[in-house]
Length: 74
Image 1 (spheres, one colour):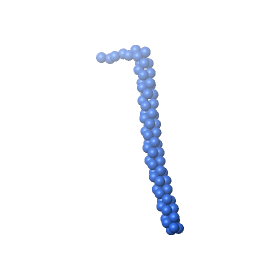
Image 2: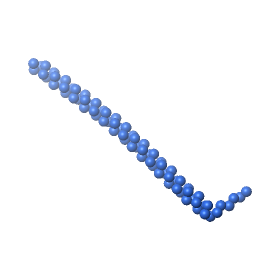
Image 3: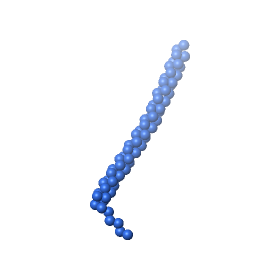
Image 4: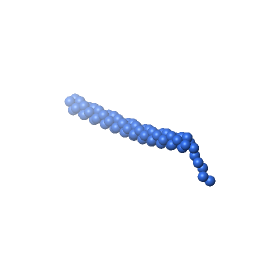
C-alpha cells in the first residue's frame, strides 16, 4: 500500500518540521540559560555568605584585640 502525499501536505510537513526544530532549539537554549543563571545565583549566595562570615570573624578578632589593649592599660 503506497500512499501518495499531496504537494501541499509535503510543504506543510516540512514547515512543521522547521517550526518544531526551532522550538526545540529555543527550549534547549532557555534551559541552558536558566541553569547558568541558577548556578550564578547559588555561587553568589555562597560567596556572599563566606564574605559576611569573614567580615564577622575579622570584627570579632579586632574587638578582642581592642579589649586586651584596654585591660593591659588599666
